[in-house]
Length: 81
Image 1 (spheres, one colour):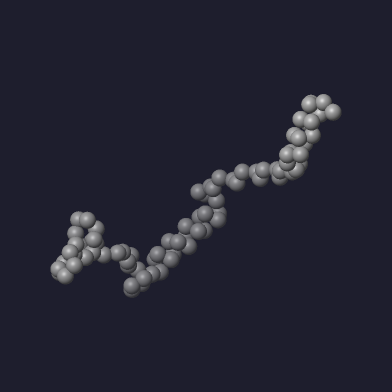
Image 2: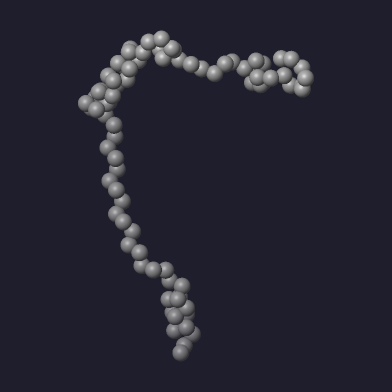
């Protein structure tokens, strides 16, 4: 057995299995602003906003921080804000 044959045997031992990769999927179509589905979704969103009343009509946000650093409490224990 020549050294070339030994090299081919060793290379064959560590060769991975032959796995066929699946074909790539075609790209998704770009959204169209004028498509019926998009226009219907916009119309429903507008009707939802118009239909809100009372507390649901307001946009609730977090309170503003008490100081510039963004902390809501005093920096030292035992002191009031």
